Structure formats: structure tokens, C-alpha cells
Image 1 (cartoon, rainbow, N blue to C red):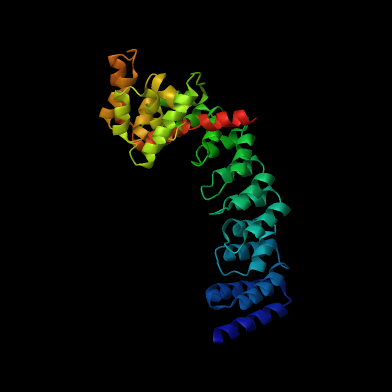
Image 2 (cartoon, helix red, strand yellow):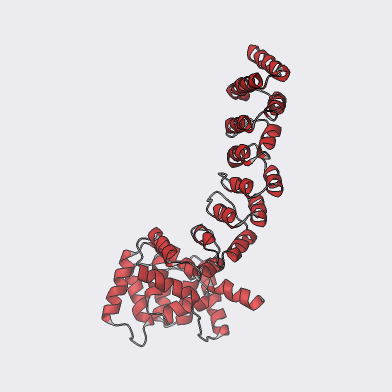
Length: 365
């Protein structure tokens, strides 16, 4: 009770004080008192503090409001009305609360984005968490630098529409390339589009995050996303094979042993369908990897789905019907298989998981 009386007395003095210097000094004292006891205040009492502090602060110079904003930015119980006033002030005042205050709701942030310029929007992109609603508003209003900051924020939730808009904006705009490619949640078809634009320097950065792949190998993977399938196959046969694999998968029988049985029985279409289901890569791309490519992509495919080296060798030999792979090539592929981790191979699969959606999108246009 004594503490509350002291607070109220200070608020009364603050409201009556006319000297700017004394009002500033008293505001500093009152704000410090509020910070020391805000957890013990009711919402009504907190708002009362906010009303008085706001009225005084906005009669004083900007540095005073900036100091108040910095004090309240990390206070969960800060008065909402005062924090909103600070968030809509000059950017030097607004930045601390826009970046850090949990008091501001999505509606509060969207209102700021709608009313203010790029500096205010940039501050919002640096929050620990940015919701999809707020991100959508940022993408609509923000410039390229703002979008790059948003894309680089791992705590920002980005809707599919927001990502599509950002990927579209990235054409001929390098500032957006790196944050988009390195986000980790870019849909495969958008990743494919980005892969056609990135620089050698950025490719090296991707390589650094997948350190157990060689630069030459990454080159081949990137080229893979841009190549055409160009292989005819019997749709009816594929559908039948995919239904067979679907049944096996529902019975928990889709595994390396089944694929080896299919290989030995020369049921190649079923083998491809099995790989396709296990790796979640569309059938045409999987067929190209297994039957056409030199083996590098098959390394990734087998490693990503957790096949042993022995199974990998059997698949390699069993699908090389024309004997085009020389012993030296096999040794090199085995070396690659031994060097890369399953996690790295799964990351590399992102470059293969584009074909189906891209083809569907093309058919829909």
C-alpha cells in the first residue's frame, strides 16, 4: 500500500509540474518506479501510469521519449496505449518498442506498417517473432531491403503468397537471393527458381552449410534442377506400380529389402515407384536419376533414404544394364557415398523435389 501511495503521489507531482527540466527529471523517476513495481500493478493502474507518463513525455524533446521507449521495450506489462504512442513516434523513439515489445499486437504492428515508412517497417522485421499476418503486410508495403531483412529473420512466419511475392521480387535483385535461399522453408518449386539466379559466391555459401559435398557435386545438383526429363514411359504401367508400392507402404513393407527384391525380379517400374515414394521425389525425376544419370544423383537418393552401402552397390549394378559405368567410376561413387551424411543427402534432395510441382504448375497455366 505504501508503494502505491508513493506512486500516486509522484504521478500527481508529475502532472502538476510545469518546468520542462523538472518534468523530465520527475518522469525519469516515475518511469523507474513503474519498472520496479509494474508486476504488482493492476491493468487499470498500469494504464493510469501510461496515460500520465505519455502526456508528459510527448511534451518533452525526442530524446526523452526515446529513453522512455528503451525502458519499456522489454517490459511485458508496459501500458499498451503508451507503447502504441511510442511505436508511432519518430523512428528513433519507435524502434526499440517495434523491435522488442510484446505488448504490441498484430493489429498494432499492421497499423504502424500502414501508416509509416520503411524505417518503421524495417524495425518490425527484426522482431524475435513475426506472424504471417504481419509478414504479409510487410511484403505488401516494404521495399527490397525490408524484404531481405524479413526473409533473413528465422523467427518470421512467411505464407506461401508472401514467399511467392518475394521470389518474384528477387529476379534481377541480388539483395533477396541469399536470405531466401538460406531460409530452409522455401518450397521446392521456388527453390528451383532461385537456383537459376544465385551467384557463384552464394553457391559457395550453400556449400559451406553442406560441407561434406564437393563444389563440383553441388554444380551437378544445381544443373539437375534445370534439366529436362525427356523420357517416355507407360502411364498405365506406372499407375499400376505406384498402387502396388502404396499398398506395400500401408503395410509398412516399403524398405530396402523390398527394393532389392524388385530389382532381382527386374520389376524396374515398381523399383522406381518405390524409390519415388521413399524419397518423396516424383516418378519422372526418380526414373531419370536411376536409369539415365551417371550415378551421382543416385548416391544422394540412396543415402537420403538410409540405404546401406551394400544395397547402394546392388542398385548401382542392377540398374546399369548396358555396363556403361567403369570400375573407376564405381570407386569414385562409392567414395562419395562414404563421405556424405544422410542429413546432407536429404538437403540435396531439395534440388530434386521440384519436378512434379513445376510440371503441374506449367500444365495449369
